Length: 288
Image 1 (spheres, one colour):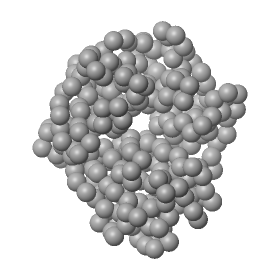
Image 2 (tube, helix red, strand yellow):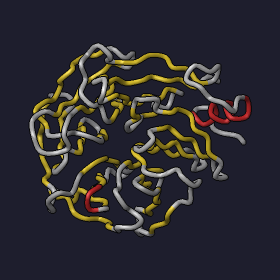
Image 3 (tube, one colour):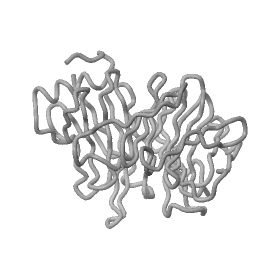
């Protein structure tokens, strides 16, 4: 199995062929640090990298409903907390994506646009249907903005100044959550993993090993290898192009959220324990 030198999956292949039992402290998979452990973060959910500013945004919140307890934190590329509440008084922000100087945030019943330079909300796009459960955001190479709507099993699209229903399917898009775009394909991780063609909307369910379901984060490699974090029995899974799977990380009392892979073999995963009220971002690195 060969992978791009610049791709994280090159390291994964070494890991699998050299070490079947992966731990957070193995020679190939290092747990570097936990960011923000002392920062009193709140139920961290998602990490988003801003390459223009070389920093990370982290979504925080409590109850998944309208309110003022949600906020966005900013971390440096080295894991230093820059601002705990960079943007606050939000509902319950979850998934995010950056387009030039605009950060788009799924915030329960609205899509927010944040001017990253000014650090303020410049537009709010309300959902056209009540109780959509907006969850994650993905932006195509052409600049199209897509948002998952978990409660109505749908994908929304930003059309001008409005969110519209782009695709809805109670079976294939059940509890649509994490999103990832590769070329002309939109990958939707919910109870299942589904692939949608951006031009034709043709939909295909991806067959996965038995028992691996109910996803939060998703990342797709150049040969359609998969990284998936699960909600129930929270874990991080790797599935290669032939369908073989390996559990990379088990939650061990801490949930795993919507992770981010930054392109330099570094993986950042929101983690937390509601019982211990501990929330942080775990930084991992895959070694060559």
